[in-house]
Image (cartoon, rainbow, N blue to C red; front, side, top):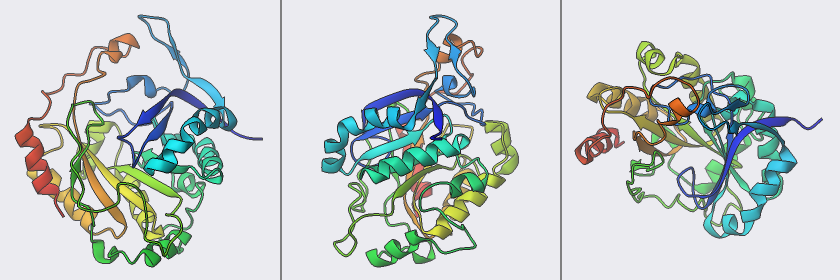
Length: 309
């Protein structure tokens, strides 16, 4: 039987969660409780109603129902190098549905990105098309990486550190020095590896990671190493909040960890912005979190310098 999934939103026409024009499917339920979370309605593993408006958030959908929305922009994906982004919540908390949706999309020629915190059993990642073995087994991904002639060995990150305005801060994304934006590969390879992982790195210190997100980061880092060993396409994303996870030592630890990986294509900074915090009251999740002011331009420039690899 085809698995269904708990979906709380589908947004078409996005440009921030992967290359090209994208449709983002937001799955409901997340095991993390990040202090800066701007989608608190994504956290619970079940439908819920807004206490202020009564609107229902979350409904069960089949793969076919979701695909009927996703394929509406197929012509634009092809023209822009875009596709589907499965996000959340945490998509790896619904591994069977995420895997089935990814496989069905790829079968129709729609590229897929998985936007994940990495907090899930490795067995959840192994359900995804093309992900096998982790540190123990070579993957078909590695073949494509070799054919591109990229200099990924030894932790060489090809693209410049860039800045994403995913959090609504009105910041223009920096242009990367690499030609990864459209997802195209040299003519020696007919298509890129099937999945792109948008993988969050929030804080390297285990105790502080738990204080900031509610979970330890050991599994997150282990899964990232395993994905890297398969040769999967990976974009690292760093949600940074002034005074919480942006010290010089925080940034140096992230930079050193990413430098030791082999297949990371780019590193994006996601500057904190308070957009969406009013939803804590709307969904009865308590008052707005007490967080600092959004970062200044000088903060972001310092982050970019510190994370340049």
